[in-house]
Length: 216
Ligand code: SAH
Image (cartoon, rainbow, N blue to C red; front, side, top):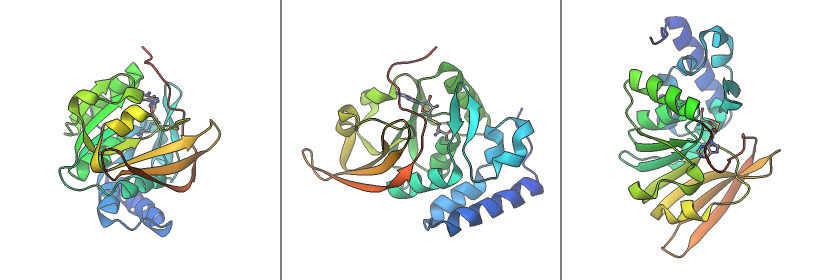
């Protein structure tokens, strides 16, 4: 059963969104989505005090729900439009997925940890969100549904996976943190033509690693 979303939660959420806005996020549609999605639904009920802090938090299986500012930053860089076909690599808690769904994107999300995949699928469906869920190795993307207008990688990669660039539509944008296991540089890849990409970097972040293969 879903937790309640009370006035207290809504008040805390409003403050969090103001904090994220003060840190430099300007895309109103991103801020509105953050305001709508109850982040505490994605964390165990005992952790309400942490749900509305601008911090990452453990969600089990050694993984984390991304920091709200980071979620907002990646989403803003993607420039999400209505009906955009978006591939998300690393469903995790499903929080970022819900943000993309609120922005009326068509979302394809893949997770390599079976427990997280099952939990996120059950929760998001209960909340009324119906993206396409996949259990598998997102390093390879989901070519059968591509190409995608946007690709969002929510784990730190050691390099830009060529297979994902291939699944990006011309005119599309991919956002991926690239680096080692201590720190990654937020990287935006714009597909200019079938053979040309433009790469820009957007500051340092810390993510859990993008791993290969799946984990039962
Ligand atoms: N968007 C998530 C972030 C979760 S952390 C959220 O808001 O909660 C990153 C997630 O990427 C983890 O759940 C991890 O298991 C997953 N991951 C890592 N490597 C992956 C891969 N190759 N394919 C799919 N998911 C992967």
